[in-house]
Length: 226
Image (cartoon, rainbow, N blue to C red; front, top):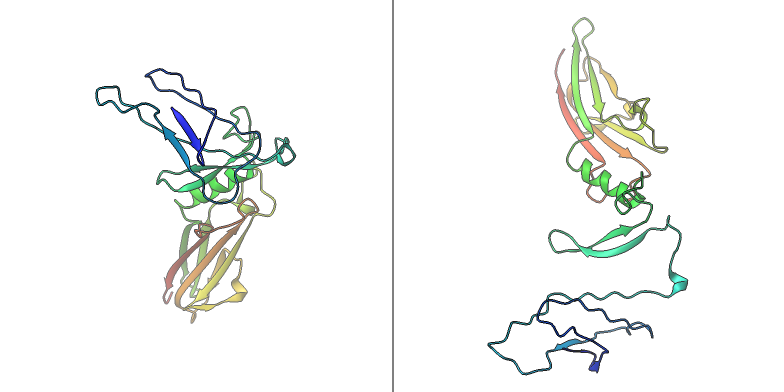
C-alpha cells in the first residue's frame, strides 16, 4: 500500500497481512496550507480478481495546534467535530470535568447542561395548566396559571439556579394587558369576557441561545359570562 499526499509519498508502513489493519501517520513539521489537498491510496501491486478483496474502510484527518494553543486546565471546554444520527456535521464538547466524558464526575459541563435543557423542554410545555374558576356571587372569573416548578417555584430541597425567572404576559382578544404582567393568578371582572391568552417565557443563564423556542409556551382560554 502506497499513500500519497498532494503527490508526495508518505512514510507509510503496512502490516502485510490480509486481515484488516489500522494505520496512523503523523506530520510534526507543520499543518496543511489553506486550500484543497489530495490524499491517494494505491495498492502497489496489479489487481487480481481471485485474490482476497482489499478495501479502504475509513479515513480521518486531525489537525492540532501548537502547544501554546493547548489548554491544560480541566475546566476548559473544547469542541470535537463529529456526525449526528442524520449524518450531519455537529460538535460535541470535550471537558474532563463533565459527567458525559468522565464517569467519576458529579457534574455536567455548561454545554451538556444547555443541551439537556433544549432536548428535554422540546418534549413538554412550560405550562402545566390554565384554568378558569367562576365566582357566581361576584361575577368574577379567576384564571390560574400553573407552570413547571422552575425559578421561584423550585421546591426547598432543590437547588435554585441564580438568574432563573419566568416572564408572563397576558392578552385579552389580542391586546396586551400590562397590569397583569408576571402574574400567575388574575381576576377577570364582569364585562371583561373574551379570549384570554398567556405567553410564558423561561429565562436561565444555563441556556444562551434558544433557537427552537423551547423556553416559550402559550395557551388560550375563553372566558364567558360567569
